[in-house]
Structure formats: structure tokens, C-alpha cells
Image (cartoon, rainbow, N blue to C red; front, side, top):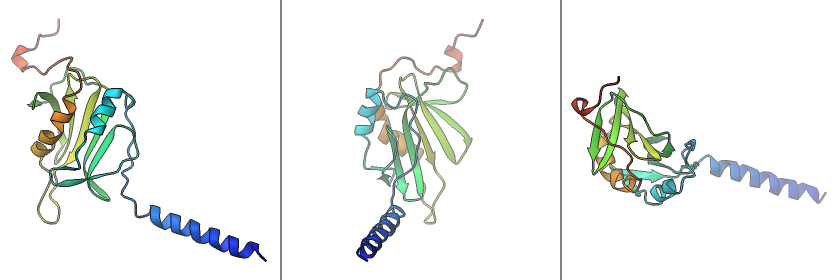
Length: 167
């Protein structure tokens, strides 16, 4: 008979734990292949509490960051992705960091550092919310470029006219 109160207490503990985890604001992400690079730890430790008016959310993967509201992350950052090779995608310098811009899924964008190892990739959703406000890609890159600038430079974007044609 003594086991019954113990079982009830255990059952209530499980129900409470499940209820609490349902309210979590942790964003489920996968770590990049080189997420354990010490330079990614340097980047991750410097990530700001807000970006473009979006609050930082907890993530469950090493060397990542997320900003937005629970259930609707507007900005996702992953350090340690494979550095991109030459591309014809547009490249933009922001505070000394070159970013390759993939706008093929606009208003959602993927921007990846070019000429930095390890590389950083950012997904951002500029779709306006119910208040007509969206994330500004310029604000995101202005906030995160100085942080990413700690990564060593091993290349830079060139204008098409400066590129050496393949033989």
C-alpha cells in the first residue's frame, strides 16, 4: 500500500516535467560539421541578446544562435559550416566581412561568410509579422558582422571583372 503514494508522486512529477518542456523556448538546430572549432566558440560567446528587434532564443546545438519569438525564429546562425567556393551569387561586404547572399527563397535569405574559415551561415526571414514589421537583413548583418570578424580571413569576394577566367 505504501507504493501507491510513491507511484502517484512519480506520476505527477512526470506530468509536470512534460508540461514544463512543452513551454520551452529552445530552438532545435543541428550543429555544423566544424561547430567544435574554438573560433566558433569565440563567435557563439559574443552573440547579442537581440538582433533587428528580435530577442535571442536558446538553441540546442553547439555554435548556433537564434532570434525571434518562441515558435517563430526570424534569424538562425550556425558557425562551422563548410566554407563556400567560388560562386556567381551576389556578395556584399558588411563591416569588413564578405557575405554571399542566396535570395532564391526570398523573403527568406541564406547568407554565408566568404573567405572565412570556419564559415558562418545565417538564415533570416524578412516576412512581415501581423504588425507589418519584419527583420531587416541590413540590421542583422550590421549586428553580426563585427562578431564574425574574429574569424581569420583567407579570401575575399571579387567583382566579376576582377575574377580570373577558368582555363
